Amino acid sequence: MINYFTDFILVAACVIGITAVNGVVTNAIGEKWFGGKRHSHIFDQSEQIQSGWNKVGGNKKR
Image (cartoon, one colour):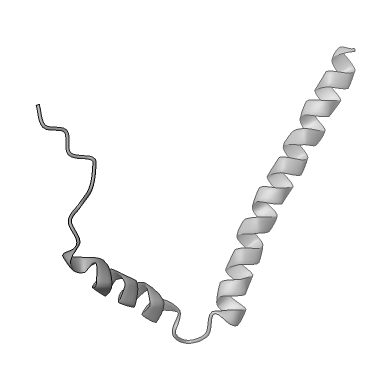
């Protein structure tokens, strides 16, 4: 019975690990191949829009 649970945990860890790595690799390939030349333009535009916003949370006053 212990062997069953050991195998189950190993297979589950492999499935979760492969899925996580697959997601990261697929995202990187998608950004490189299909991201176009204006990849950083979207990030810069978003940063410019949010530049005047107030910061929310993370400030603990005692």
